[in-house]
Each structure stands twice: as structure tokens, then as C-alpha cells.
Length: 127
View 1: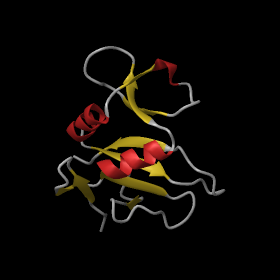
View 2: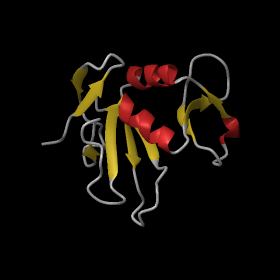
View 3: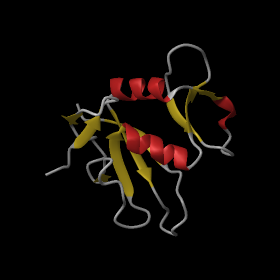
View 4: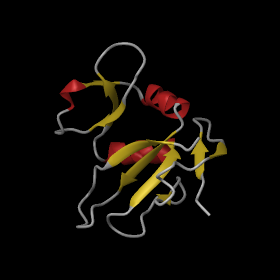
């Protein structure tokens, strides 16, 4: 049976959502269970606090592609990774689009080698 996501709104309330099409094989985490079982393991979440803490621990800031208006492509801008084509946005705007599109955040805490990982990807939830 595939895991289901747990979402947490800005007010802290929880609600169930469908698992992502390709994220059901990853370990689902929320604020209470955000540690991988081993180095290199890919984790999946929709928890705003987990995403923000993970990004900020690596110096990441919420961003979108350049241009004005509503964010279209969500990114996390890490220092030293060539974010010249990105526009910084607020976490509130980033999470508004994240929730509206009902996507899942895939990420790694550490590489298999044990070094810190900046791997992340957004994937669409199942219809």
C-alpha cells in the first residue's frame, strides 16, 4: 500500500493528499519524522516547515525564473550554484504556488558518501 502525504498549512492544520506518481517509492517525512534511514536516501514531503528548514540549512532561498508577476517555475537558489537567472521571492509566495499545484518536494539530506546533499526536485501529485 503506498504511503500518503501529510500536508501542513501555515496554520499548522493537517490534511491527507494523494501520493505523487513517482514519489511513492521514497520515504515520506513530516516535521516529526524527517530523518533518512541511510545516507543517499531520497525523502518526500509536502510539509512547509521541513522544506524551509532543509533549504535554509544549506543557505537556500525561495526563487522563481526571472520575470515579473506571479511565480511560474519554483526553484531554491543555493549560494554558489549560478542563480543569476533566478528572482528571489518570499516563502509565502513560494508555498502558495507549491500548494496550488499540489506538488511533492523530493530531497536528500546526505549523499551516499555522507556529504551534505543539495538534491531536490518537485514532482506532481497523482490525479
